[in-house]
Length: 296
Image 1: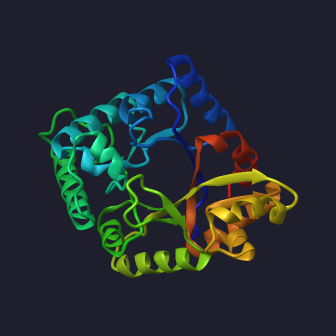
Image 2: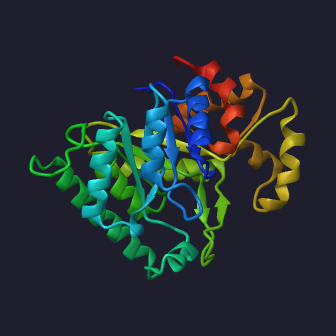
């Protein structure tokens, strides 16, 4: 079954109240379905930012994209989620991940767990938050029942198994962390590697009663009539990719509006990605693509 497209934008720049509300209203005008906030130090605090986004808009849902589970105690997180869902009128989508930037743990005064420990904590967080929010005794109560939709992001096998078991939305980054890098630098996956990760997830999810929605975060959106000339200056940052491979990378969206729309149609057919998110810097550039794909 082909899902209809849905579009989100991840707001990353700290802004004063009026500027924040203006950005969120602009996202609504451009047709975005979800306004998202990340969970990195130096960026807006997710939950108050989402409440303000919902107050400034009428139609878009709001979501965390994604919370660093290592920063959160499950009971306190459940309180935040329930309160935010109630204050936004049931528009919240909860996104969770393991956390991958060691320097942020250091800055927060938190120990840096191993990868396995971070995944284990993610599982405990998901299970405990789910238990609390679905309990009729939990206060405050979330607006959505049994709980807000859960998005989980990651691409390692163990995380993909967690996503297959628990998530309503499976989020793929199209990247992989550089081993040992404290600042969480990422390397870009080829189209074939992304396909392999999606195929692995599908194997783990084979027993699901209902398929999850598949999400992809687009890193670059640039309208151009010469895709090759546009990608060449970036090849030095992706030395493992040829020019042709770079042009096929799912997280790079280059071309005319029609070409970009066709790329997303083809990626939905190939991988199943129907929920497309972009970064705040691409807020305006992606708007015409949303218009081109609206209703599909």
